[in-house]
Length: 197
Image (cartoon, rainbow, N blue to C red; front, side, top):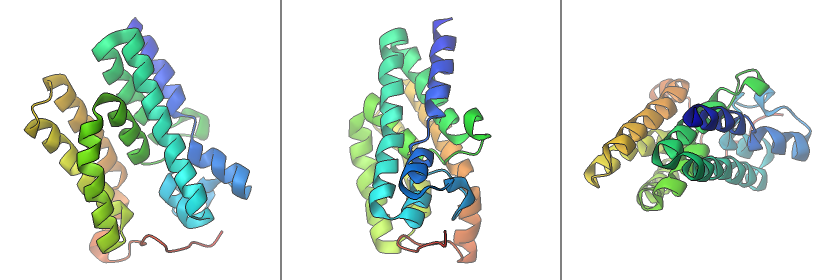
């Protein structure tokens, strides 16, 4: 029963979209109706600029941290895993926003900061280098999330956390399927590209 409670709380915590709220407050817009239509930090960045994008990223990451810390306090190791999974599901498919959410990268990073910050410290710089070289945030996200479970395996993390990492990775890559098609076609937007509001 405790795990179910943690899962429900975390799901609805995930529904609180920093990207959506910041776009409403800073730009007076529904971010889901602009740019890529995604309620995530990259779309906020392209639509409203760097400051709004960074705030959106930080907010969506912090809810991942908060959910896992709460899950750990209430339900120990299984609680933090349930919280991590369901806060990302809540971000990606938020009932309160008509199931139109983000792609889960910032929230997943927040989740993993709370569980194992060393893994984040190993992977995030790789993503930043990819962005610097290619200017594709989506490519960095896909590669970073692909590396995530491999890193968990290589560093001999507990089996439950390895399976957990594969699930989070699969969700993130699935959410980027349209980006992957655009990358292959050469039509994916680059960092710094602005969109019409």
